Image (tube, rainbow, N blue to C red):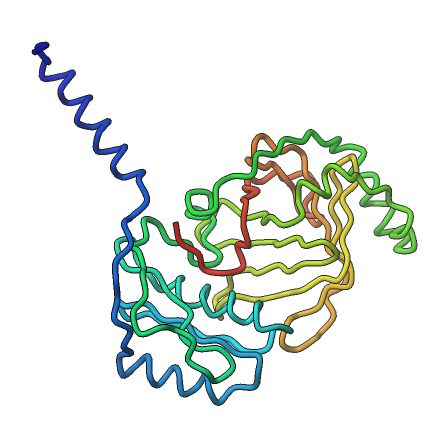
Length: 274
């Protein structure tokens, strides 16, 4: 048997622990039953208009959602609302009810989560979603000139040249600040949403159209506050660079001040787990 020094044994042990930690948690059986608090949450969900969904964890957290245009969207929101209240080591949430009907079986398989993302915590987003494998180099001077021209003449909106590659890179992903209390911008095929942390909670704003130019100007048009519908106009940012998901950007109101963010491979509007 080969001799291991204390140092090599320590390295081997540390490597083994790291490999074990990286393995997915084994599924555990749970005989589904609700706590009193979860039952009260379910009663609220059942009274809401459809589509609605309710999600629970064996360890106490729960979440529900209604509306959002489809049952699939409401279900995703309910799971996200439940998951953001988990902690590492707790068991994951499951869908318990949809549109007033219990859909969970009597016994389900669940797992213990390793990491939790609660909106809009930019510090945990990369470890839960993973960085998008995207790189891009913008032209700040040209993007700033485009922004100035657009601000002087909003009718230029329809003549901004779109970069198909940059648009594909952003679609279905989230631009998230690197701060614990920051923002998350979700881009879908046509529009998207920006969720930002404020003293009163998380402020949600939607936009119906967006453009990304080859120079790195990204503008979100027809923005409005979700809930009130109050218009928020056009908002833009300048992408100076993306290096395998690590972003350097500037807001339209302070184009000379570069900030750090991350482009993550997931929907950072919602709570999530790994």
